[in-house]
Amino acid sequence: MGDHKKFTYVSPGANGKGHSEPEDISDTPFETIASSRESQEGLSFPAHIKVTAKAILSSLEGRLDDLNLLNSARGAILYRHGIESDDVPSESTVAALLTVEAFSDAFNVSYYALT
Image (cartoon, rainbow, N blue to C red; front, side):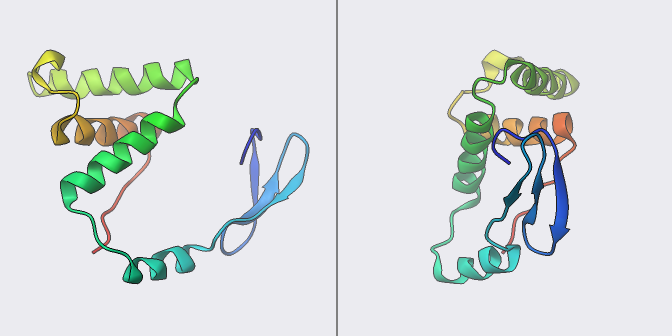
């Protein structure tokens, strides 16, 4: 969506209109993305979670309010389980899973593993 604040669905796939300065937006249809995984080497679960967490953090660069919301959600998850943030090594699978789960909670996003 680039710098657009709004998006209007137009047709199946990933086609629509970006608002602000209206322009067509299209992307690779989900079916194409899903079928391409057959020719790719699979990642282990820990590697997949770490890649996903890095993508999440990269997408929030420069977005202080959203990053603060993610960190609040992360803190709430740790508190709920009685864990101190210093007890979770920053490069661990647990830290990555915590980032993915906090993102899911903070932004009401679901995630699924395809096998």
